[in-house]
Image 1: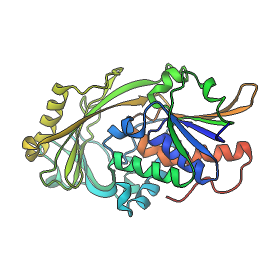
Image 2: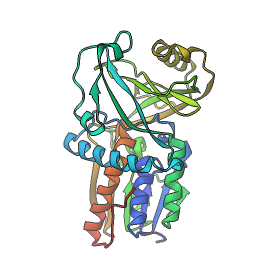
Image 3: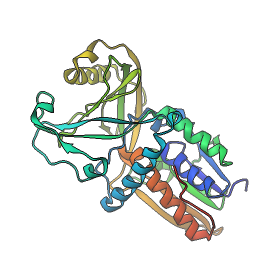
Image 4: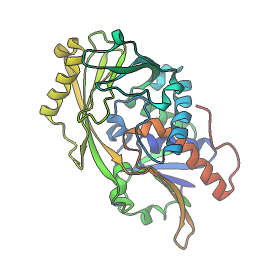
Length: 328
């Protein structure tokens, strides 16, 4: 065996898990059927935002740990992470989410709300340029002695012949790889346009809203979203959906209407009733198999919390020494 641990999947969950393991002293290889730039993570918005995921008490802890890690990383411009201010707003009365206290959120005054919105909260949180951030994680993995190769597994049993520890971070691919029929793909499409000068983020957080509407500003471009098409595995952009995204966002910020489109991105969110983070010892070889998937649209938000828990479970199981929870 050429590695002491194999991580399946090169999205944000897989790379963060691999970094944690490599920095704890393990010889780690990431095996993935797509390199990081082609994963769903690369197509994400992406912002720290605790989606409604289960189990709730663990999601809250993982979100909190990841917020701390991303905030620390935001001091390094090469990570692609910035702390940005903005609002989430609702078209119906609702309370601020419980995680608001973690980011110093406050309820918006009526004159701070966009037209048609009746409640909202203002806060500052990490906004991530995902392609750049994934590159940062790859560099960090390689600096810790880890590696990545493009390789597809048809079964987990194949992977378990590769190393004594295997971590399954295959995202929506876990539906077939782990024979987990509870995993559904929820197709997300977004549009990247030139930034006409917008500096604060906006997200429509109306409970039960059929459409996703968000505006995430980067220095020279905006990420506009989005869609949530359950059971749709199509990776090609839909031009009609793109135009509808632009229309909804321009209704919030009129300057967006004339912005030049740079690109469209599509990803498949791995949705499951509960995040699957568990370990099991499998087969006659005693290979330690761990699962870390089913994060839905909260892969970034849960990434460091879940990765550190995986590292701790491995440390406990194999009796390894040294730190398994590196500082950001």
